[in-house]
Image 1 (spheres, rainbow, N blue to C red):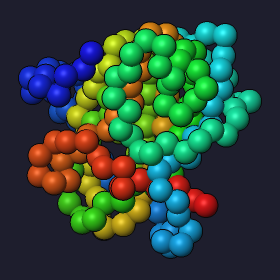
Image 2 (image 1 turned 180 degrees about the horizontal axis):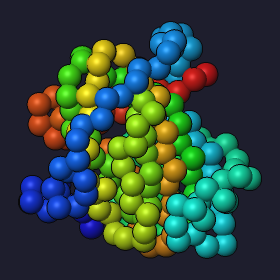
Image 3 (image 1 turned 180 degrees about the vertical axis):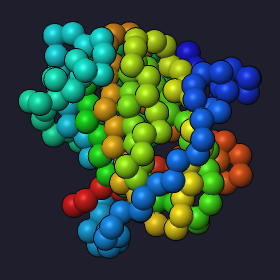
Length: 189
């Protein structure tokens, strides 16, 4: 199980922490407040087995819309608990989409934590890639440049094979690394 007290060294070694920052592209046009609903849109597939992101993407060709996610704040579950808002605890693939809001421009660190695989992007740039079966663990800190405050497209492909599940996202928008609040996510009505 991932612990938020994991030493910083382990977080840095977990992924591409030393890669150059990527500049995100804001949504164009910016969605109006009246066109958005809280959380993230999600579609699910339930393959016989899923061990890679390629398996998940293949299964998602026949995905069904699921109840919206509250955000990216799904802590490690107990075996047998449903994965995210799906109707299954195991062998779940999810296509997640919507927007994330940055309230100010600047350079930020982001980190996606998952069990099992995940590939995520913000503003057209990959921010997380972890394509294997594992316990709840970080994909690695990614530094992103946010040129202007506002909404940025958010997309993720996720899979959970068996056992426990988690899907979370941290950022340092408040100065210290911490969970991205659910209120920072929205999707089109």
